[in-house]
Length: 432
Image (cartoon, rainbow, N blue to C red):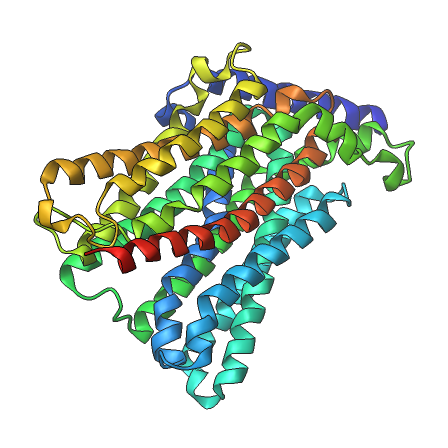
């Protein structure tokens, strides 16, 4: 029986390895015909969609649920950010020390999202029955569970993607970028037909139901594709080993092999989280647009750049042996050089009297480049993880290890962004 299992697993390994080699040279449209590639991409969409749902509903919660001037309305976003980033770091640390059951984690995390947004959909309909403090406590609990669910799915998905190969790691990154582009496009479109701050109960309810549908569809496709079987191969081939703890890979080993890649991920997120500060406070100068249209447009431009950066990350110039992890780390640091350029544009209308269309185009180009470099560095970093490791055991463990640096980068980046919020506000106070 064991020999049959080994034969089947060997055939499965050959199939996945052949898939990876084929996809390396295939155009994107050809990749989208591969079921495993599409499944990993949809998982990527599902990883970011819940967070986008919370962000998109922020104004609804602040205005309709907590009535703008209450303490709950004023602290909603900061509390949500703190709970989300802190819980993500802590839960990723916990998961990364338990190096088993990766396939189950993918589905389990998605089920948590279905439950969370099912409860939120009901909450939208019955929220007036409960006092504000209870509503606030409920929403923060949902943020906590959703954040842990996302961490669980991402931990399992990146472990499996590392086993499958770099092309599948890129697929997850692409899915996350798609999940970033779609909401920003919707928000930009809404800015032309109405005030995006006016969000109906029906619209929020439908958005939450869409999140449920995305997570549920992901579970179905994941089951059909059978990519979870990649988690069984090493366990079966090492069936003499009963103690899971003896099979764990230490953080020291992983850091030794991946230090420049995980530091690239960490650095990229710290720099990238400055983007919303500038995007929300840099206003139009010469283009025939209102700020209520211009700002969503900038978010869309950045997200499109992010998507493009991830799409080109499999180009030979980035995946060649000459583009080492150390060079990737230098690339991530070099992105910080773009930040001072944002102060050259119309922060808080400080340059409005001398406005010009050329200045707007320069700012749009800068935001696009900032998005491209974000998506590019992140995808390159995740795609290079698998080739640096020598066994599937290490590749699976690396899924959780890289997520620690991802969530830590987000947490540190959110703290650094407060400094830039203060700096930008002083520009507003000091203008003539």
